[in-house]
Length: 86
Image 1: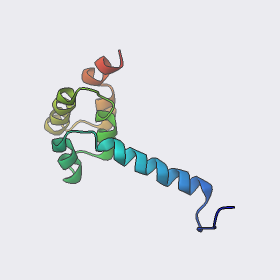
Image 2 (image 1 turned 90 degrees about the vertical axis):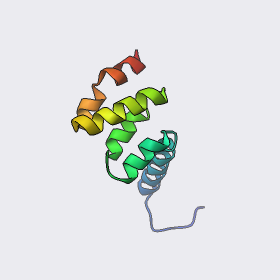
Image 3 (image 1 turned 90 degrees about the horizontal axis):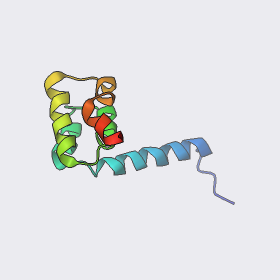
Image 4 (image 1 turned 30 degrees about the vertical axis):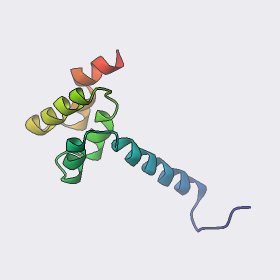
């Protein structure tokens, strides 16, 4: 039997999910991590960037997001991301 911590099972899963997402973001190049910290891009942008395998492509898209003020939806439909899924 597990001790009652005052959290529901779904809250515990949600917290674990958030932790996993943060750990995945640590795989991004340091420059992108700094961009997240400095609010140059959102967590939504970062979650999209982490799905791209090549760090050079990640950085290229990172700079495009900043330069063109791209929304997360635009980034999700970008050619750089599309070529990763093909």
